[in-house]
Image (cartoon, rainbow, N blue to C red; front, side):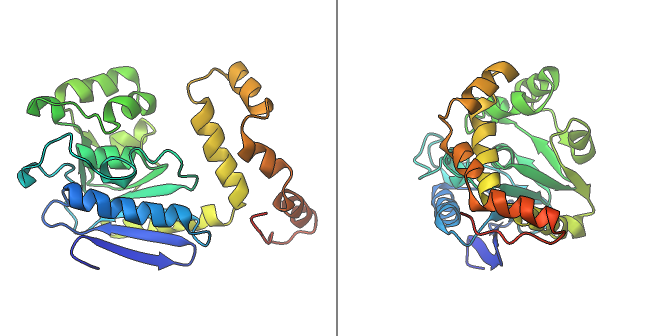
Length: 258
């Protein structure tokens, strides 16, 4: 682990650990280092899933480092704030292993992930309005899509805190586990993803992103239109044949990514 990030490759899984005591706050330099990590993950064909977590037990991330004295509209590097919030061409899943408080931009980083495993003492909140700003690194856009409108608006307008179990109740969090088990359970979830066909996962991410603003009928039209190349590729792939053949033969499939 260096001064800012710990990066570890665990088979097909990349593990990224924010390491900025005491609160794992993110300044522009850290944001650009995170961008390097996520771009490396995106472009490495041997990696299938990434896990992002924070060092320590109190904070996943306190978000934007107000004490750094930088402008809130500073250049955060490729992928936007924290290297992920605007990395729209990432076609592999990212899991947030939320080991403590996810505050402001830290919460927005978690929201940019596909799945969230949270420690039972984790909390999620967006205090930006009390600072005279708004959570424009995805909070104001993503949160209303992930929570009931009344809860999302209350959090956005008041900075209301959402505990881990309540977040699980509303479907924001996939799992709530003891603090000592957060990374272990995130790895279990990541391994379950790596058991699946890589092209199918890529196609799933693209379809979800392309149709989330559409109703079901319009979503079908887009999916069947031929415009989503990832969907066409998976239908015509060797892995589609292999998966069905492995099922018939009662064996584990051997994915080629082709």
